[in-house]
Length: 118
Image (cartoon, rainbow, N blue to C red; front, side):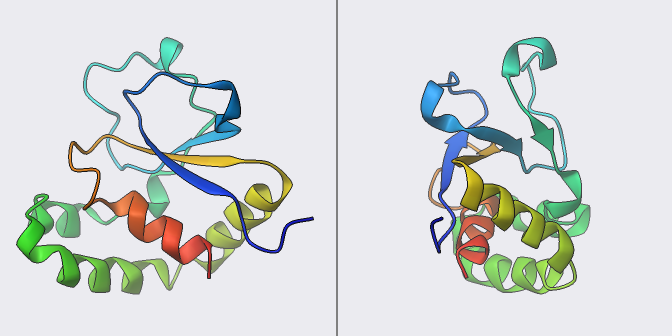
């Protein structure tokens, strides 16, 4: 069994692939225009997404990235059980965190991936 979880990131709009493993949407809102019936999303964990207040404050503005990371990690600190469940899942099989943001370098899935690998 691997010591470190195998956690990948992918935009929810990208087509699923066979090596995605378990696909988990980690956004609070369902991605616009994405049909649930065609998304092949195994789990939708809204509770691990940034709070509505934090999401709106961040607004995907890259100059707020470091402060967003700090605040989001603080929110995740209270979600240990859900994080542990994802880590366990990732040790058993590949895990792909799905997000809708256009910015692939500044989004909550990146922070969540880092946290899961701790």
